Image (cartoon, rainbow, N blue to C red; front, side):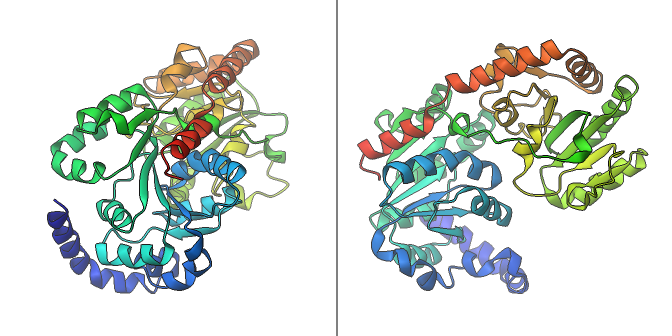
Length: 414
């Protein structure tokens, strides 16, 4: 299986090589790190320390591993920690959020010769993969060099499970080399077992997202004395629905402000243009001036500020849920005591618990979205009850970071 994977990966690498040469000129892509260049110099200070290497795909996963990184550094301060991610935005978020990490890097391409070269320089004691970052050569190279491998905050959605079953032999070949699976729920554990993972390697430790520390509100004059609705991590197709709902809500609520935070910052100009087409006064957060008090829509075009903006909201909408992408993190506003609204495609962990306790509200489309947000804006007591329940849901499920650390220690991973 590994041979077949490497033949395919090498062919794709050769086909993509002309594009890679162009990307080499674009420093933001950090192609040197992806090719493993300069690894000797980057890892030289850590080589004799046998660091713990933690990999998280992008921004959301980086935020989720923050509590685990804090626990590891607090309880084992002598350990060095390397954090890698696959995206530049993930790397920027990691540098903002994780203050006690020894080295940040972009994960190299999943090519065996590159990874063996990089890992020989880094010499990690353990490789921790967040959620389900299945890179076969990364896992194989780590094991070949005597490194223990664990999945942390592991999850396997119904959608991913169906996909992996189609390529079961490839998946199992990689997963069977993993030493330990620290999983979010019994449902995740059941799916891993059905893929062929032995029960002894699996344990339910909970979701690290429940352990993420809430932040304080950002102070923006444009929000003063206004009702604020924050729509976080929105995807293409959702902003139009939100703007239609906003137009209706403005007929009943004066001084209403909509904050839109697109999931991908590259879409900010598109969202800004759409707001202008609707006739709204719109401004980007990075261009906000002291006199912009009459703005209708504020677009969050900066990295790492969504939580502090959620903290200013009377109501939070969580994106990726009106379109079929599975939704984004509803626990982020819930931890701040903000009532949460999301669409029919929400599949994120914790959403069901929030719904069950009346801390979140699921809507099917424009009419329900408008009605639900309107009811919450109109009724402070309803907001207060929902927000209080949201905090309780979070509090009752904390402890995943400690449980994960203890299991990793017990099994000799770290």
